[in-house]
Length: 335
Image (cartoon, rainbow, N blue to C red; front, side, top):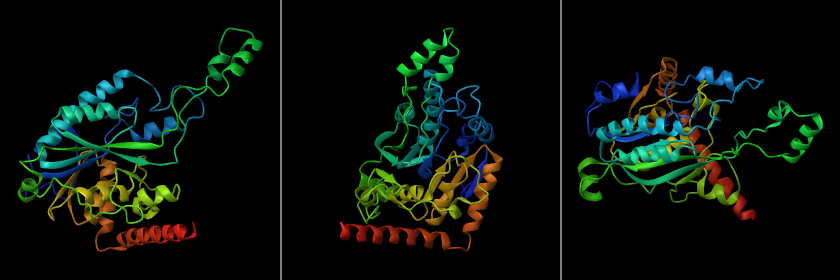
């Protein structure tokens, strides 16, 4: 197997510096959640520093991720174009590249991936209901205006309910890109064992795979078509304080759709706390992970070690799926 010294390991390193060490045409699927390059959230962001800023009660500056700056997207595009070119090099012909993003800068991310040579085949949407409204009122600015109190009150009344143009974000986009195939899809699958989707994978109430999914029960219609198992506290780990842990079921879903070979290698260049690796290991696939934060590399390794000789996480996921389906069937019969 190629990349022997890296397979089934999490490497603590800078991604751009490390990527040249991965052999070309050796990876089946790349699944990652990169830095989003909103203010204070670029490739140098510090989890603890951002967390502390978000917990301040006195407004000294805009919380991380709320400042609008056109340069953010340009920096993101330039940086992710370099990342995407390396990912293009290491993926097998027909290999898949799944990349999470924010709605605000998705276009920059998708453009970088496209310009690196990939075909943008689709966009997945992770739909959720639980999220914080980010819009800000302007009362604190009105108070600082050099006018009398009556005039201030009149402006506040006039602008009541009007806030900065940032609404509650209830979905996360995921680019689905593919390295061009070697001749036909059939030829590519027979030669490289990647390039097509497994439509035996089901979602919701045993439904055909879709490019929309949710882990939150929303209503009968949405749940029936798009629901995946909700994350348990155990799957994340009580010790895992990463701020943006992705649900295991989502990573499993994308891997099951796209990874065909029994020796498939799933690569995550921004591993975080290890969910991609955990999903790959649970599904019997190989993985390679990179993260620049040593703390999160150790968390990833701990999560992976807890899978050794244990099947309870897998059983729980299967039981959750059975519960979802049986509960939906009962709801449909009562409707």
